[in-house]
Image 1 (cartoon, rainbow, N blue to C red):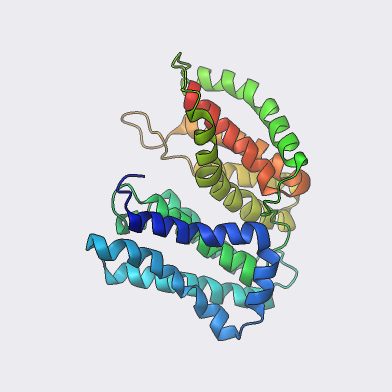
Image 2: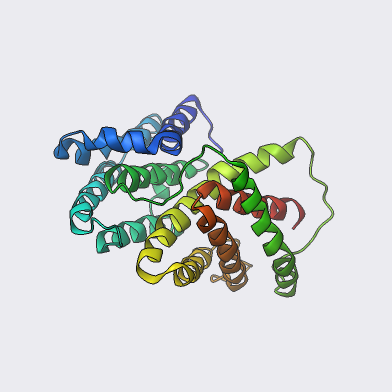
Length: 295
């Protein structure tokens, strides 16, 4: 990140704390939240406005519309999913789930809220949206089968690397045929390799696997079955990359959409084997990591 200041580091720590807590103690957090009075558990996530204020005040970019957004959006999400708990106790998926996922997905994809943040710190917006989603879906909705549990197992690595080995050969060929992949000879600095892998794991792969596998694919399975859910979630994942790394003069990056859709199939397979976000995150991280260095 650019503009790294003590305030920015503090906000990063504040935003990472809920994600880490849910990753290791989601059930305990959910039980604690459910013991609160209904009104309190609904308005509690209004505190997610704090990271925005910590950044915006010293930068002199405070705007009431963003205060309203970050204070009200998580409360609305909590209220909707409180209703969803009653309307859909079997957790087969409810229109309220769909609306929240649509808003979160489009907000990230179309960068709706990024202008609220200084240049170089806009990734903090995405992490804040992850926190809102975790509170809504895990603490309020108590959605089962997400696999957002980071007590790592050997099976996570085994499954994740297996899907990587299935995915890599055909996609390398297809990517070069589409002109999307261009191998180069720049040797990466050895000391950067693990740091880059860790950065991709936590700040790219985990949020995307949480959204597309733990929430989208998970809910689709309950209505449509495993295969159909895998295909639809993968297509949605592919389409979410339509405006990423655009070639000059092109807005819809078809090659990226195709390759990301195929990648989504293998990420989804990794997740659904044991319903584990760490497994699909390992596959996802390795793909992005290899591509970043050699393609």
